[in-house]
Image (cartoon, rainbow, N blue to C red; front, side):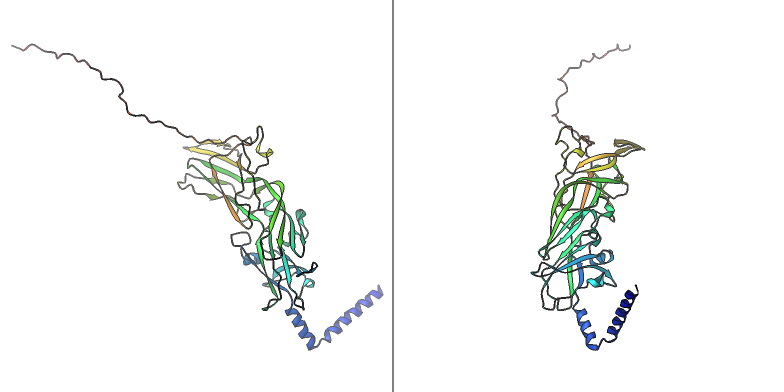
Amino acid sequence: MIMKKIILSVAAISSLMFASCTNDADQISEAQKEQNAIGFSTYSMLSKGTPIGSNEDFKNSGKNFEVVGFIAGNATEYMRAQISFKNLVWDYVNSFDKAYWPNKGEKLNFYAITPYTDFHPGINGNAINYAADAATVTYTIPTTTSEQQDLMYASTAALSKPASGGNVTLPFKHALNQVHFKAKTESKNLHVDIAENGIELCNINSKGTFTFPKEEAIGSWQIQVTPTTFRATSEAKTINTNSESLSAIEVSSAADVLMLMPQSLTAWNPAGEVNSTASTQAGAYLKINCKLYTKVGNDKVYYHGTDANYAFMYVPFSGTGMDGMGKKITYTLIFGGGFTDEGQPILTPITFDTTVENWVDAVPDVDIPTQKPVTFPLAN
């Protein structure tokens, strides 16, 4: 123990002596080294109202990103670091990870991904593999909406040290889509109450492998068949209060956004199988907890649910628009149909068929006899 203390003391003294002997040349060398440090700035490629839609959103989000660099033509990582926004700049979280531009002018490829916490430690089995020619991400969407993240990525072509300084600009893109819901009715006589958190998306895939290349390009997904149910965050809503415009109103939360992978879906076919229910088929569908009714004076006539209870309605869902990335997709529910779990129609509108015939005489001509006039004798 005494020997360890002596060694530590000597090391400390040596460190102090080294610092005190630093000359002007050393200070200039350190300044040049710092100018050669690799710094980072970011921008978002998209501005479609996604959870992170601008640089300011990104800076204020509190999300760190991981960046990895390769020397062009070399399969070994040149650098790996976690970067956060602090003191008005993007900076290294750990100063020991700070990297510098190669002195020989080699070019560097960079990959970056956020949020850092989804991969370190990897939650839900999430993992990322960096290679010189591409980065591959294994990712699972959490079923709880509040835990879902705006997965973003960036990559660059081979870069030399910028003439204006050492900063690398990372063009982040969105790897997922966000999904919103509006609702309206097709008749001013129909009223709909939707329960709190009453919209579920069923048989939606939740896991996939994402690849983004080493140049500034759009990545691609390989989706695994992982039928999952997601529930949109929403307050209880009443749709249509005798509005003449029948305009759609927002149902899902704009703050707690539903984030889903891009994918192609096959909608549930209510008539597809005999003696089956929506939950036993592979097709995608919406499960909506709601009441349907009309008003007669102060009374309500219920078509679905009761005054005291909501009931589930099942609607085939094809996921139109979900096959791309970085989209804000709004689905408008138009109430006036829907099915039970067994595929039976819930609401059938009253329709009318009419026929029109030509005018015809009601009966043939008829003689109507009248009595002869009554005569009276003249008075004398």
